[in-house]
Image (cartoon, rainbow, N blue to C red; front, side):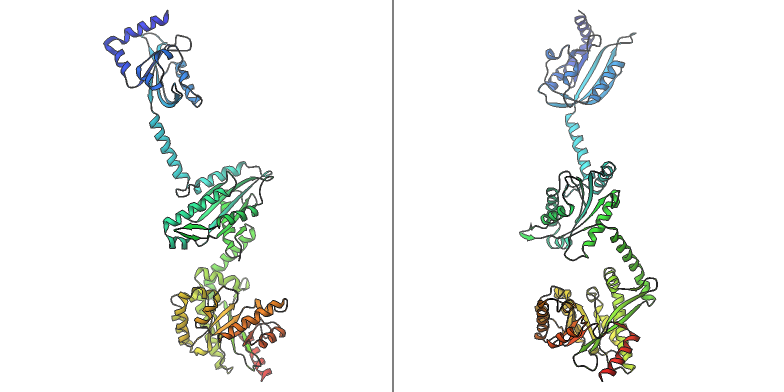
Length: 580
């Protein structure tokens, strides 16, 4: 038979110079196949092939090598081998093979034809097998590690931003706008910096990992999440319109879970978050725009009291653009004398003269007209410009008080609102001393109004308040009742005047409880030997109620709205003539 003759020929060729023994003992698997027989079967394997595959020579002889293939063998790889055999050419590749016990292993397989002299067709094909499973596994592990490092956040295991944006970009091109919805959600942990400073980086990282786990557990399956920056997370939500939960409802539930207590170093802490969202395609059609708009909505939350969530609207962009315009104009506005002080009197009961005035800033923009302090003061505080503006206000108010005296209008005490940012500036006390010296105003004619929220930071303000008091300046608490200060601080700090916020006066007769509340607040101030001012008084009834319950002063439209200097001077002269 041809098979027997082939073996005889092989043995004759290989046994010369002991080559057959060398091949038999080689540390790699060797197979020889005969392409002249049906299905190109194996006609020789060495010992290492047996140990590598678990098959004996007897089990594989005269079989095609495909028995080494299994369910996960790549058919494209086997096609390379078939093509090489068909074209009588060599080939080398790594493919997944299976041992006799079905254990998979990676086989670095080299196949080459063996030609007899003067013949175009090969006599045999020789195959070399190397078990490279360890190398392949190491390579895959390395590649997976590289993929993990380049695609995922090393701390939380969430997607990194590059991977996240790439996924969104692809998904946005394919999603069905009619039946599906897409939302980008930005989530920021409020004041996380203080947790980091208090507990250290290691414990803070533990909180971030727990926070990330809660995000995974409380969002729909297959939701993509990234840690964008430190304590800022971004979510890509993809749902069917028919089955989707209301976004507001989902985020309310998520907020409840994220703000549950966390344990850190044996202590229990709570986190507060701000959440903003944008919807595709209404709020943007690209990953970059959707993420940016979700962040914009999230940042708006901090200016809305008692809110944790905001959806993006283009009205927000309009406000931001307005803020940018104001910020860019502030510096030049001061240099070009566009700011002006208005004055509103404070009146005592049965008085024939005013007790004093409050100086209130106004901005006369040549292009946009009168700009409200509510629009530009917060921006001035955020940018630090409030320190320059505050110095100008204080100097201008003190200068005007001295001008009225020179004009024969008498000594008119002036009160000036002091921003918390300005008050906490290291140079504030020196600024006050310098302005008093430059303008010549008497300490008794100057009152500084600070907000109630400053009282919550007594450690940093107490010394400065006592230093101001030592100068002879009066200190008042403005908008009392709108903050969360402890009553104890009113007694312990050098406060002279309590100004009750207009909100408690405005609705005085709408509910009976409002009258009781205002009465109690006046009594509280008087019990602590403080002078009490009721703000926002607009009617005789409100004025009478305030004075009948022992308020010392009233301030509001009932007597006068805030007026520019020339108009205030006319009002004052008329007031003095009618009460004299």
